[in-house]
Amino acid sequence: MKGTLTSRATARTQREQQVLAQALRAPMTPRWIFTLQGWNAYVRESLKAPDLQDCAPAGTKVASGDPRKRYHGHLLLVPHDEFDAALLKTHRLLWANRNRREGLMDRVIDGPPGTGKTFLLRVIGRDFQRNIEEHHQDRIPVVHISVPQDPDNLVNWVWEIARFLALTPEPTTADELLQPRRTPDLSGPVYHVMERSWTQLLLVDGLQRTQPEQLRPALHYFDLLREQLGITTIFCGTGAGEILHAARGKADHLAAVEKGLHMRAPVVTAKDGSEVKLLPSKSPSRLPTTWLDPLPLHKNDQETWPGIIKEFEQNLRLHRLSPNALVDEAVYLHQRTGGYMKLLSQLICQAAIAAIEEDIEDITKDLLENIDIGG
Picture 1 (cartoon, rainbow, N blue to C red):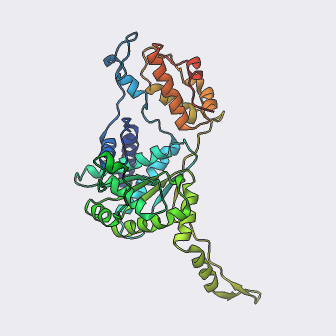
Picture 2: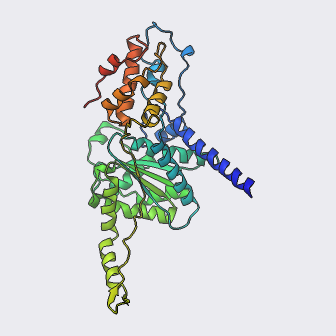
Picture 3: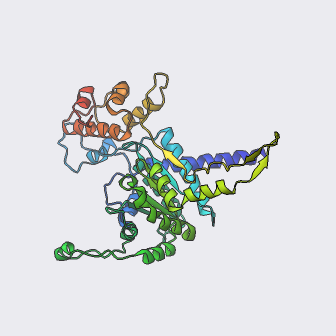
């Protein structure tokens, strides 16, 4: 029995490591990701750091298409505990949903801008699709959309899904492009294609651009996809949790439901003979939320932030990079970025590109101070 438990724990650890390893190979090629072709290219591309031995030597003029310049535009993902935990929790949720006919659960990714929410959303979808494609090559397991420009109409939400699936007729001439067109309702074709293609995951980004009243009609459509096709929806955006909570309350008439629960609450006799109404417990949240916040820097914590800086440094490909070039500036880097991963990535990537272009091939504090990331 003990050996069986050990083997199961080992298998679980190996699977978790596989999920996290796939996140590390997140691609950098900027493609239009809200189309099936662009999304599939993102999923199947694997990012690899260039070998300095295969690149132009130091002192050589660097061309615009140099692999090191392209690589340092994004760099490899630098994981941290908060990101890893969120990825693994969602991984387990999705695999639980795959084996259920009812009781499926959606999820929310929330947090301040610049903390890596969109990146996490896409890594989740990428990991899920890669695992499906290990066994099936004829499916569309993941659909990735953003909140439509005009979210007031359900037709526009469906249109975003249809555009991803290449179901929307695109204008073929400049005249057609300029002509006003009435957006058709493609909910039927979208449903049919997602059913036929075994779609199981819908990623919705940019929720901060909508209001609860605008989201309410779309929620019922997403509910239909979940209940009839088994599609899990992951919503992402700053304030997404509050927006969804308000929209769900309006869509499902939760205020009236809770009022009815209070009215139907039974009355019991207490020990002192008085009558007491047994009010129902507060309804638990039906939408788990993953929070990504800026990373703190503590004097007693020499692992989290310093460890992230060390990973960034190890991912650099510069000919004359000084030992601990970034590690020695960990406090300064936190002061500049406030612990926001977007700002940290931009600062280091821009500095690396400047080091290549100016033939410095090193990152110094003077170089970092010359990089403008706002603030």
